[in-house]
Length: 353
Ligand code: 5AD
Image 1 (cartoon, protein in one colour):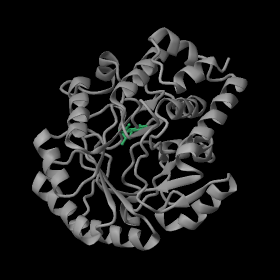
Image 2 (tube, rainbow, N blue to C red):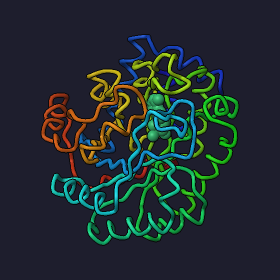
Image 3 (cartoon, helix red, strand yellow):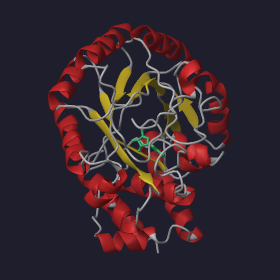
Image 4 (spheres, rainbow, N blue to C red):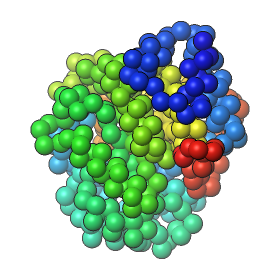
């Protein structure tokens, strides 16, 4: 039974049929418990009982894209749009630094107003103001030249989920003009430039099959990103996918366990979406091998407006100002929040994180 786990941990690649077989066992309690115990052990070996925190600054919800699943898609006329100024962003960093954050994640829609010059100006100011902090960008698809300029300005990490590694499935989630091929090219460019790269996908997105998830795992095992963000799909009422059901909590944590064995030194967040579908979602993620949480550092006045999906949590223990409460929750399950930069640990022999 534990056989595939040993093989996965030793770096073996599985074909789609084998993955489907493994994935179809996600509701088997014996398998789950064995997987999670092993994933925890692996996380422990690389990171001890540390949980890294990243301060998330959602600086614009304008987006030129029209992804069918996303609440801040261009066609959503109900979204209340906002942009933070450079000064707003720097005050978020100031507040975050005082709270103990040493990584800032600038996340936003693909907003044309934030040109390379504009983002470089913000990143340079952050780099100068907080030289000991890691700067992560999560601002979508841009040219390689743009990624280079942002890196030179001081950005260290980049988050860009591939969303699904099957080209046809990708086309069912995105409007024409957005392609998996281009998304992958961006990810490989980011790696080449020297960013620590995060990718990932939604679990239970419309039309997703186990074969698609198998392809996601195969793609990630090829890309070998430093970080992998996964969370359940959650419908948003003002999108074409409003009537689809949310992705499964059980499948999401099962996949986290698998990812921990496959990429042992990776940074795996217990995401906001996981915390949104279940009050204990993030704890379950950590007990399945996740080791990062990303509290929200955005100004309170805009937090409810960065609504990627319905009921997105924003002001409870996921809020940066409630770090002490988050720490208590982590300690209750045997973990502790640490506030260093939390870089990715190199994986053991023969593999890379
Ligand atoms: N449900 C869950 N996750 C979503 N995202 C966007 N819309 C949704 C949704 N409805 C995720 C995407 C994106 C990340 C920022 O948020 O995977 O990459």
